[in-house]
Image (tube, rainbow, N blue to C red; front, side, top):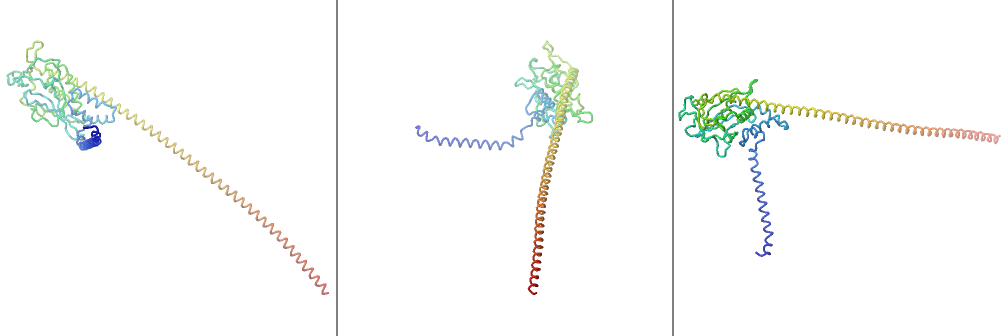
Length: 414
């Protein structure tokens, strides 16, 4: 294509580009406007996302975020959050066992949310933090966790469980929280605990209590037999909640024994496997976790109370400041009213003075007019007096003329 032909095509190409760009912008705007009502329904308030996160945060992050959420004092909604904190109560704890060969265990808490008129389902889970490894694997012949008695060590009901490989204490565990949309249906329900609601001096466990229990379990370092163990994690959460709060066990799998657990562990430094009764060890560790939970709860309670006190003081200071501002405004209004009254009085005084001056002017005018009238009256009186004198003089002359004429007439007659 020659340069001349290219230059001739440039205006058409430019119009085509502008047309395509404008069409794209209009289409993008239309799609955005159409999708906005749908996306709005999925936008989650920050407060709700902190309590029931849509992601899968760790237990520690979730508990710490809840503490910060309820212990905040520099937010206008902090007092409302703390009021909501007491309404999010734990109704049930359901302890599940996976239906697969591994038999992974976890806990689902049912949380009452009266503000939104619904129930929330929170799954509390422990897994390894190794990529691609969900839970500890056990040999297929030793996956039955429970035994009916301490003497049962058969392959079908053995309480001995072995690691596929020696435990590396340097590998940690991942304790996480999931928010579920419905309760598990295909999993085996191990135990169900129903907690009493708040009544009198007794308070029901709250979502924050559950988070603190999970954090206490997460931070407990006294248990060294099964690191990263989902079964122990579920056991501790359920038992600590049962120890701390009034409850009723409404379901327990009758095929499982909870009092005579026997766990196969690696011997210290020997690499050999031995059986050890865990029940007493569990009691001791449960007691340690309860102490950890109480310490956490006391610390968090102090933080929340201090935050509430700060908010209360802040509100009181605002009330005092508002009262001072109101008093200042009232004083300013009174001063303005007084000034207005003073101005009005000054105006009235000026008006009265003007009226007085006008009255004086009218009085002076009346006096001047009266003087002029009196002068005119005096002039008229003088004129009248002169006229009377002239009339008397004329009468006298007339009389003299008449007298003289009569005298002359008598002389002629005589």
